[in-house]
Image (tube, rainbow over all chains, first blue to last red; front, side):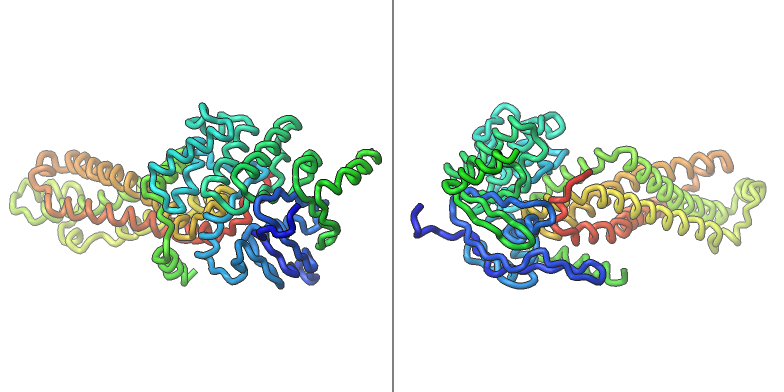
Amino acid sequence: MATVQDVVVRAIDVRKEFSRGQEVVHALRGVSVDIFRGEFLAIMGPSGSGKSTLFNMIGGLDKPTDGMVFIDDVDIAQLDAYELAWMRCRKIGYIFQSFNLLPTLTALENVKIPMLFANVDEDTALDKAARILERVGLGERIFHRPGRMSGGQQQRVAIARAMANDPAIVLADEPTANLDLHTGEEIIHLLKKLSQELHVTVISATHDHKMLNLCDRVAWIRDGAIERLERRADLKITVGTIDGHQ
Amino acid sequence: MSETPEELLAILSSESSHLPNKTLFQLAMAGLRVRITRSLVTLISVILAIAYLTYSGVSSALIRALAGSDAEAVLTLLRQANINPDQVRLGNPVDRWLVVMALLTCTVGIANAMLMSVTERFREIGTMKCLGAEDSTVVKLFLIESSLMGVVGSLVGIVTGLALTFLIGLLQFGGYAFSYMPMASMLVYSGLSFVAGIFLCLVGAGYPALLAARMRPVEALRVEE
């Protein structure tokens, strides 16, 4: 890979502490990482490792106790509530474990919502929402409500919604955890495809080893720190040994 | 809770994302429809409170009008109904208290229903915030939902209250209930009831709306067991 790469997320010595009663929990103990434009990064680690905390920091959902997180060269710790909302709306797309579509709206309306928040006019939003849904393979289901769709279809709508405002990064929190093996694989392939076509950075917190085959890099988190940061090319051997143990 | 109104106003007047009102209304309507049983129970409490307010206002205006009459037949009817015209002129304090209690109970009912709706929807609200909704959007959503209930409840309540006034008046005073009905007061009390209905819905929804606005976007990531 070329060394001159465009950094889209830069975390510098990020620390996060929670107080739980008397004791202080160090969720992150100084994490530094550069994430490049257009790459597919998987964040892996056992629960309680600080994986979700790191994920929330990168996603502008939480602020670090110490250290800095830059998204597109903006330090998110410096933003006020309004600016954070602006950032979340235009720079970041979110994909959730349980899809989180608004249950009362159709697929098309769900994809339209973030564009309306970004002050895109109604007609443009409608056109674009239909186009993106077509792209994720739901062209003929745009008027269905989430209740009438399978998990895989709902997650496709969620992916379309995350892409609606052409974000710089898409954050996927365990996107395959509520899906069966096959559907999960389809979703990962779709994420990979869109990431390449639209040059969007995809960052996914996951337990799913299927993701290792498609991501560009893996960050292994343990005890609030990045234990290893590997490129997929170097990973093959590691995966082999993991499988070997099973 | 004393700073609630100021904090709410501050949120509402802050810079706002321009989610079209049409979409907000659609979401609010959908929110009511999804919880239809609870919405109806809350609606009934609004209707009853407002009907009672309208009824007690208009019927006392009617009795005042009747008491002002110099026709002996009307005064006889009043006496038969055990109504002392002098007392009526001052207004019945027990009635007033009952009206106030009804309105208070109704406000608490609305607050309760909206609070439940907020806690049930934490993930939905969190998701909307992840998508770029600002605090003002969330507040607006809940206030619209509640004032929709206020408008419908007040209108139905006013009609019910007026119908009751005429029905009971007809039973007590016969045709005089119509000929003596003070139209101006009737309109004034109906208008007043309408304003009161919407006002108590907004007051009831104020605190829940603020709670919803304060909800953090991270809530969207929480997984339901």
